[in-house]
Length: 227
Image (cartoon, helix red, strand yellow):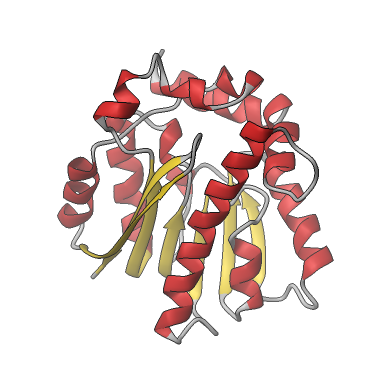
């Protein structure tokens, strides 16, 4: 399966059955045990990023691109903290849901906007570019292109999460088996941390902070690269 096919499958999936499933996972309604576990893992990732940015003490007024924003799980709390946020996602349905959640959550939505775009065509200049739980859809050769492009948009910082390529995860029949039911429709790619670090360093970034998030069905490495 080529990279173009991967993108088409991901787009179609998150505009159809995948949207309904992941909207529930990223919400607060009732879900099954596996979905609840993934929800907790994803929220831990979001909370870790928020803790990092809040600890810096300059979130208010900061320009942030949330690349692959999904339903706004990170974009909305960033906007609540005073950041100026652009949330982008390949799925029209995800973007529409993020916009509705922002309207229902925020007193004012002046400092957050959402757009349906491929990551590869994102443009602009931002203090911080964040991309969470997206690299899992990119094979290594395409991941390098995408990360390099995101780095070109970032003035000072890039924050990425990825599914680490470890012996334990590699021994599983396939990473897609970590996800419930129809979620296995899309491929799930693992990445070697050394490869991600090498890409960031080639774009002038050095690793500042890092974290691991692990639950029963959610595995993530989180890296912050700074200029």
